[in-house]
Length: 101
Image 1 (cartoon, rainbow, N blue to C red):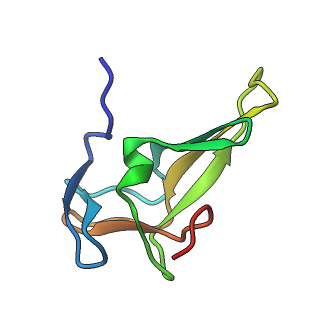
Image 2: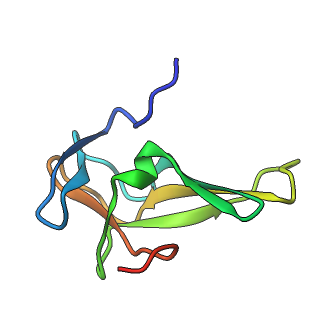
């Protein structure tokens, strides 16, 4: 069954902007939380995970391009990786690279 978000995160009101992603439990540094963006040809598509994460100049997560064997050359995907341990209740943040802040 498809789940738009990993079980370790939820969407709540954010002090940064509107809604954000928050840890429902402690998340260890280096955890791959899943796909945030998919690029097919010249179009970038945000997944629910990518759609609710807010920008920070001191982020606790990073968007990392995923390279899969046999992946079509015109398709790219990016996953959200934690840069540090995230405490329960803490907002997950990312430095935006696709959008202007």
